[in-house]
Length: 100
Image 1: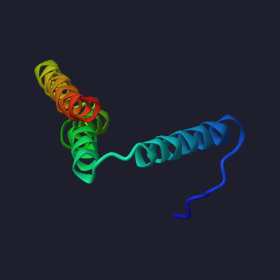
Image 2: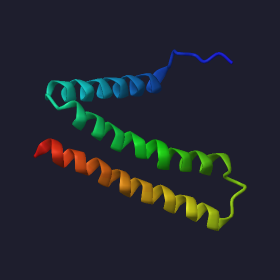
Image 3: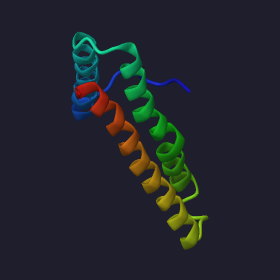
């Protein structure tokens, strides 16, 4: 399958705003003079929890939407929420170190 890289209409502007925002955040972090350890700690805390807890739960919920029982669905939601809480805490600690 061929994937088109050209977007039309509203999606085009949303994609460009997201790209510009990510680039701006990267520029601000690089210009702030953070140590490499703080940068890696913050990046790992934020993206690690997304990749390990939240994205798998979201994909599982989407892929097996009609095949899960209510208890399974609740368990997956609890796992995603606990992952989000720990992700927020894991992101909070490096931010405190950076701004102290």
